[in-house]
Length: 77
Image (cartoon, rainbow, N blue to C red; front, side, top):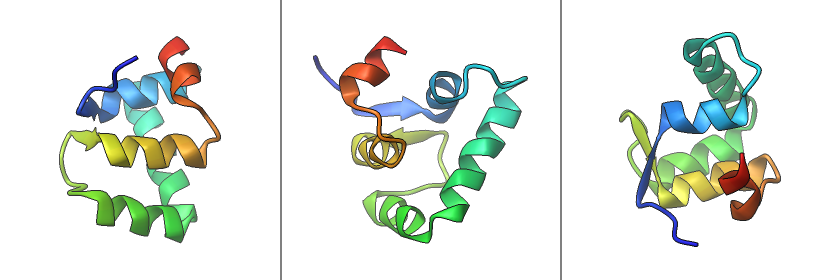
């Protein structure tokens, strides 16, 4: 299994929050989750730029680790 170099934030939230009403509300849920955990927020900021429409591979792995999701599980979502 290969991990793409970047993943769009919208693709990520669609997989993490499949029952969300819209992509916009799913994005808000992810932002709230990151804000609640200051260590995760700091790690994501240190891993790369956060004001883009995508996360890099390292940021994705940090987020998945926070949600206790393995890469294999993420691919199956």
